[in-house]
Length: 75
Image (cartoon, rainbow, N blue to C red):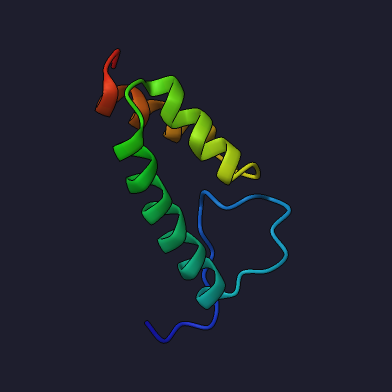
């Protein structure tokens, strides 16, 4: 991707900028962290806690909640 600007609908409203490379890098890191946290979690609450500890500025926690309960039960 050669974009200079990326405006993500789920980004934090106080994000410093819309730099595409930074946002893509952060998204990739979040997804990798999610996969690792999922492997180490046995309940939705554990997964949510691991992800919010690692990404405290998450702008859309509802999406994390839905994914956790869908993947680990209760959803």
